[in-house]
Amino acid sequence: PGELVTVLGRPSNYKSGLMQFWARKIARDILEDEAEKEMVVYATWEMAIEELGLYDLAAATSLSASDISQGHVDEAAWEALLAAAMKRAGMPIWIIGHSIERRKKRPRLTLSNIGKALLWVEREMGYHPRAVFLDYLQQMEPEERPNTRNREGTRRMDIFENVYRCKDMALALGCPVILGVQARREVDDRPWKLPQLGDGMESSNIEHTSDKMLSVWMPKTSETAGEPLRGARELTVNDNLLLVRICKQKMGPAGQWMALHVDPGRNEISSFERAAEAPAYGQRGWEDDDDEYAA
Image (cartoon, rainbow, N blue to C red):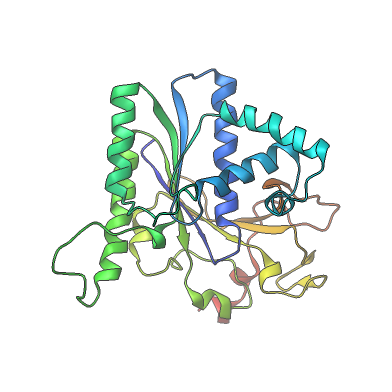
């Protein structure tokens, strides 16, 4: 409770997917604990709430989200989706974001608006968030600051202040806040593209204020499929390989990375099938052994 956890990654490298999987896991824990007045909150500035709902149905039915969205669904799959929709209605995941149901522009969603709404829900309805997910930092609307919109450096200051607000939200709500963060472009120029501690885009306050930091990399976005992964040649680049690194962990070890198996279409993540070729959890990445790169 009260901690700010950031998930750092380049575009299309599954930071939102990891956060969605994580939120669903916590929701299942709430159901198992029979905590009727707790929920998970997922606020998105990127996806429509209907898109997130579609991923929930895909995960529940083991169908591909791509197939569902394109209407490639037979009668049996449709029945499975209807049943999954009823179960989803009972899942304690509350989504905040824009909808495509009405053809209107997206609302200007600020952290202050989200914080006020969640405090109202807690005080008036008696519901308390076990965790809040914010997807993601660089897309957040800035708080209104009159007469400063064209001042040089204002964008960086907006990011800087929003990181503080995310930490304040975690403290005010008494739960962890998990924040998606875009990694800077320089990561793409490295041979080992798993983001490091200082790679948050546009503000060093990300690494300073975060209590924990994870970074993600799907090698398929930058490396040749079917080839051994440079720096970890016991791994083969494929559509399902996801690397996750612990960049920072207050009162815990950091620097380790591990390989995971992900099914993007169903938003399912599992431990990597080792078969003697995958690195054990805790092995440091290749860049730690390369003095020139580390420098």
